[in-house]
Length: 309
Image (cartoon, rainbow, N blue to C red):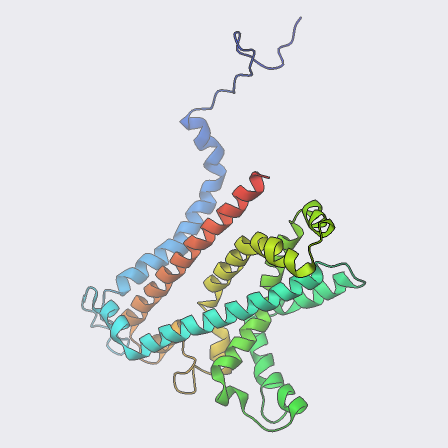
């Protein structure tokens, strides 16, 4: 008895692709994922829809029974309020500064770890450690062990009694965020470095290219998408920074380090304006979605690049 291994077209002898199942079969295969999908929708989308609803109300917790519908007035207030505009500027400045310096230091460390040396695995583990520390713990560490004017590490090394947090509040917050997020950038860029073709690099060395020429003309263009991915993912997380600002500066001095998440906190728990805070929260979500959209495109392009190899 002859066993048919694969069905072939009688004229071309080419394999005939298997017939796809119907809609019912596809739904049967997807059915196990439905509980997780429903849970994700309930946990994420229902609160967001409720926040959208609250953003259309003039609701102050000191007047709980008075919640008139005001439409888009809260959003107009968000964009016209000088404190919120200042918070938006601080958000962009703190996020851009932390992401930029994290990428630069992460690239330098990734180039170091891409070389073989004794104890590389130990060094790599130690460099990853800051990213594993809780944000509040990291902020407390820098506030008291690094920046404290009386017994902090900086004044202990260089002398003096400078109050770094009061004198340079933005730099203090950015330094803390850079210390914590540099390992994240380092891992992404290290993955990009290790995906380079060793044969191509060796051929460039044989042809007489020096280390700087190889880095500028080959390594850096190869890392472009990894740099974009690190910048976009870092921006998504850092735009929502609250722990470091609340712990180190409390938004001060004045409003020097008040970003949008911290301003939303103040609007909710100090001014008790739930409607206005909800509108500001929606604005932050929209900005995050815009950045996340670019991040997803970069990730998709990375996957397509790997498939084409």
